[in-house]
Every structure is written in C-alpha cells, then in structure tokens.
Length: 600
Image (cartoon, rainbow, N blue to C red):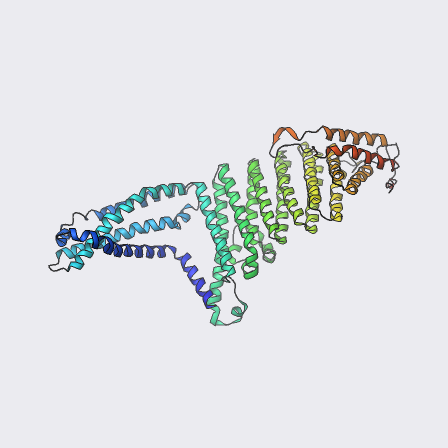
C-alpha cells in the first residue's frame, strides 16, 4: 500500500508540476555543463593561454554584450510566439492550452531564461572579481570559465536553435499537427491508464474504505486521480470536437473523426485490464456528469456505470452529432466515414467480447439510420441511407463472425424493421424505392456470411424467415385485397439469388424454404403466370454483369449480379417440381389457407 501511495504521489507531481520540474532540470543541466566545461575544457586547454585573468575580467568588453543578446533573443522568441499562437488560435481552438503544455517549448524557453539569468549573475561576479585587490587564482579561473561557457557556447547554441524552434511552432499551429498532438497525448494517457490499473494505482481497496480517518486522505487522493483521468479523457474528446466545429476542410474533418474512433478503440482494448484491477474506475465522477454532452443523458448514468460504457457513449455522441451536421451540409463522404468509424469501434468491441458495448453500437447504428430516414424524407435524398446501411451490415457481419445467436437475432430484427419502414416510405417517395433493394442485398450478404461461418441451421432458418418477409411487408398507404402480396422483381430476384447460393453450397433445404415462400406469396397468381414471372427473373439474373456502368459511393458493383448464376437451371428444375406439388387455382382469388405443402 505504501509503495502504491508514493507511486500516485510521484505521478501526480510529474504531471501537475511539469513546468517547474523542467526548470529545475535546466538549472541542473547548466550547473553540470559548467562543472564539466571547467574541468574538461577550460582547465586543460584554455587556462594556460591566459596571462592576466584579472585584467581580462576588468576589461569586460568581451562579455558585456551578452545580457542584451540574451534578453533580445528572449523577447524575439516570445514576441513571435505570442503573435503566431494568438492568430492561429482564432481558427484552431485549444492551441494555447497545447502550447503551454508542450515539453519542447518549455525546455527551450526555460533554457533561454536560465541562460539570461546566468549571464546577469556572471556580470556581477566578474565585476566583483576584477575590482578586488586580492583574488585567488581559483576564483578568477571559475569566473572566466563561467563567462566563456555562457557567452561563447550557451548563447550561440540558443541563437542556432531559435530559427528551428520558430519553424517548429509554425508547423505546430497547422491543424493536422494539432489534431495529431491531441490524439497522441490521449493515447499516451490511455496507455498510462492501463499501466496504472495493472499496478493497482487506480483502485480503492475495500479495507481502505472501511478504515476511519487514518487512511481518509489517501483514499481521497485515489479518488482525485481517478476523477482527473476521467476528466482529461473527456477533455481530449471535447478538444477534437471543438476542432471539428472550426475547421472547414474535409481532410482535417475526416482526420478528427478517425482520431476520435481510434481513441475509443484503444480504450476498448484496455478495458479488460480496468475491469480486472479497478472496476470502480467506471463510476461516473461529478466532473464528467457536468459535461455538455452528458447533461442530456442524466437518466442513463446508472446504466452506463453498469455496462461500463461511459467513455464510448461520449465518443459515439460526438460522432452522432457530427453525422447530423454532415448530412445537413450534404457532405456524404464524411457522413459515411462516421458510420464506418462506428463500425470499426463495434469490431473492436467484438474482438474484446464486450457484449454490452456491442448493444450500444447497435443502438447507435439504429440512431444513424433514423437520422438518415428523417433527412431523406425532408430532402428527398437516399444517398446517406445507401452509405449507412453498408457499414451497418458490415457490423452485423462482424457479429455473425462472433457467433452470438442472440445478438444476430436482435440485429437482423432491427434491420428487418427498417426495411419495412423504408418500403412504406417508398410508396410515396420514389428515391426510397431503390433503397429497399439495397437493404435486401445487404441482408442477403449477412445470410451468406452465416453460411460461411457455419452457424447452426436453426438460427439460419430464423434469420431467413426475416429475409423472406421483405416482399410481404405491410403497406399503410394501400388497403386492398392484395395488401402484403405485391410482387417486387428486385426483392424477388435477390431472394432467388440467395437460393442459387444455397443450391451451389449444398443447402437445398434453405433453398426450398425460399421457393415455398415464393409459392405462398403468389397463390393469387395462376400457375402459368407464376412460372413465367420466375423464369423472367432468372433470365434477368443471368444477364446481369458483375459491374454496373455507373459509379456510386460504394463503387460500381451490381447488386443484382450473382456469382452462382450457373445454378439457375437447377433452381428452375427444383421450382417447377415443387410448383407441381401445389394446388393452384388459375383464378385470381383463392381462399385463405387453401395452399398445400409440397410432398416430401
């Protein structure tokens, strides 16, 4: 316990008093350089060439210019920095905060200040030594050594470093460099958090909490460190979010969203260490409860503590806010990047088997889809939904690889819900019509991934049941006897394409389920007409090229193309065989429940 306590104290001092520590380090380095210069250089090579040390000191012209040089250099550097940083901070917020904590700047500025003070003291020392009637040779040599070191070694070095340092600061103010600096600081903080957790430096032991006043102050120090880490991690995300509001170019905007995502992913990767060694770290402190992004989530604090997702929720909220703004500004590519980064965070959550966080990512994806639907209806624009569903399905495919049947069922249920809603909107909004086929195609890719991963046949049948309901959707805009039995060439073509995949991969039972759905959905159609429709759909699939002749945000891949088109003859033969086993009346209306199952 004692060692942990001193570790906390030392880390706190290093981080809280970084500038004074650097000042003391510079003073120590100058003293060390003074000592080494005298014994290694002055005493060995210079002292023997000086005949009258006291007279040289009394003359003073060879060092009298140094104070003005040091102060001029200090004024030049500080003046340049004040102008550059002040101007740059108008378009790049938080720059002053970063600069005041930049170690390179602290080392160089303190070096100039210590050098100037050192020289002023030398002026007094040399003047005093030159006017004394009797001065020991050792004192004279020390004064000369110090003056030579400061004037002809330290001062030229400071002058030589001035231009590179100013150029360094100019590069520092570039937005991309500011973003990288903030990100690197945060990654270092998160990695340090992992180290401190593994050493038990963030955990408050039960025995400490139960003891009285004896350890009260120590426990409070643990809590302050814990709260400080939470606040600093949030503050970094806020800094990146502020930059996102200020910058106007696409490249830094994309870089900021990527850095927010990478910060979350890095944090997810060390969460297991925190859970094992300091579970109390996930208790939300009062400081972050007052965070601007969290004030509207007061009712969710207990749930976030329980699921240990407060930091991820903060990052996802920022990505969600950015998504809304980007789709309103019609920056489709950057809006798509938000969905991609959310998918990547979900992938890392799956790799770390964090089911609570996977559920959070699912909810966030549903929220993005809702934003896309609202924007699409308002602006008659389907492009954002077209991009978002691609990344949503990618995330669901990661879940399929995770092989958690409950999560697979839930995520595919959500997807089916949104396909239903988009289909209903497509009855009035024509731009949404193609989206129904796009969502269906993404659903097909998920089912194919389930077969590739070798999931149990029962879960595949259940999810296939969701898939087959897509062309049997409720239509609130049209109340007719044919409601729920409308024939969609696009949807039906994609379902047949999936049946071809099943046939080619020896899963005929699933292919037969698709055929049964086709027959039951079209029992209002004559046998000949149904056969003609399926034949036409198969012919259409057979003619589709792999690539479309126009480019989209997802490339020019043709969603109606099937790699398994060589199984079409097999499908047509199976379909005709099963069609013969159904009793279909040639009239247009058939009593409910009169459809017979195929013979086995």
